[in-house]
Length: 270
Ligand code: NAI
Image (cartoon, rainbow, N blue to C red; front, side):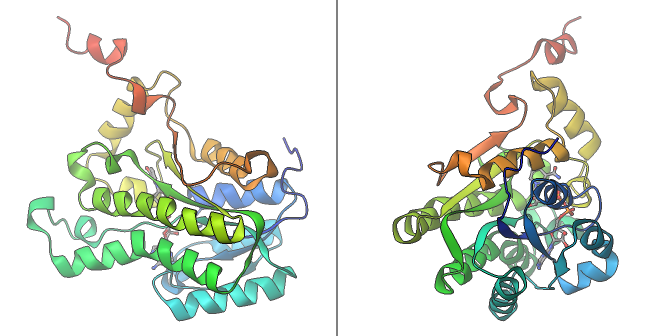
């Protein structure tokens, strides 16, 4: 159902790889809600993914950008304003990748070259996106920037590996940049901490099937899906949440505040 929440708004969506991606669902919802969007992803991901299909469906242009490259980001933001015909009202950072996870390196045996690369892609890129937007004065007043994160930033999930540290850094950027973006330009910056979700990035986590089933059993409302995450993100892009900023917002069916559920207890009761 559409509420026209983003009617007349313009935005950039990073990270739609395929139809399972949280960014994909968000792009579809933003389009339904009346927004005009530019889609972007790393050049290599665009060759592997299906972003053209999404662009057609949402009537959007695609502008490739590696989110670790300041030059690519500058070009993306300038071109997006040209294509969309004005400043931006919202930006979604939906990017994550750990080279240590991909190469099967344990948290206690990291290759620090891999660690730095994963941190640049998953965490520092969020600062680069914010800084490029800020310097170009590319956001409208009351605009909204959102990045996606996971609760491993606060609690230990052993197989989340160095992504836990990357997410902690990412969430800190939302607070720190959110201060300056708010003061100087009246722009909101938040992170959404999403339930485990079966996407390419999600399934990369070791033991994902057990992990997602456990989270579902622990959450009074069950795991939040990618489509539900898109709905929540749309509210943060809308004018209905103008004073929400510098927050890490849990979108997890109640998981983060649950000590134990009866269903999980039953598994241990003879
Ligand atoms: P996904 O694999 O569909 O999306 C990750 C995206 O990051 C891909 O489109 C990939 O091409 C992009 N990317 C990687 N390197 C890049 C670079 N250098 N420049 C630009 N883009 C780059 O997976 P998903 O799950 O939709 O991930 C989106 C976000 O949601 C990530 O930040 C992830 O950590 C976060 N998240 C995912 C959860 C899950 O269980 N799937 C749970 C909580 C948060």
